[in-house]
Length: 130
Figure 1 (cartoon, helix red, strand yellow):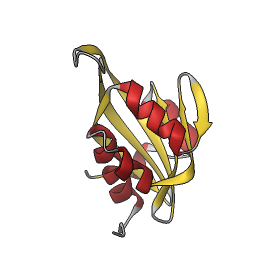
Figure 2 (cartoon, one colour):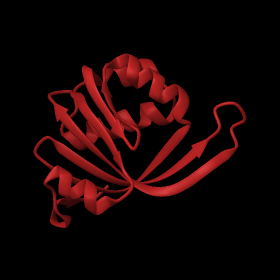
Figure 3 (cartoon, one colour):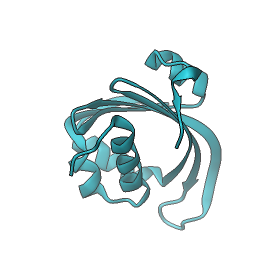
Figure 4 (cartoon, one colour):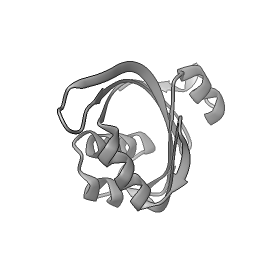
């Protein structure tokens, strides 16, 4: 399935991550995807699988900013224990995605929307309706 724009691809990727559908997530991700967050960064589908298996994270997109192949989304994150399902944390975060064709090549999570926008080279006027 082709996506008409980078944000549509990011939405599909996020839906796969939220539903813990690792096969779909890998299909939407480049084999060398970079995953970056507060604990550092790494590359590849195995890292993506490991991250998804331990994170217990569900993200709800609140705002989106797009230019060319870069997407930043402001989100509300809820972390749950993988073992019990109990909420272990909750906060607003931002995620930056880089897209190449029909694949996500980079996913980075930030604790602050302004920092994510700055590192992506985006501005508030790049906001799109969601």
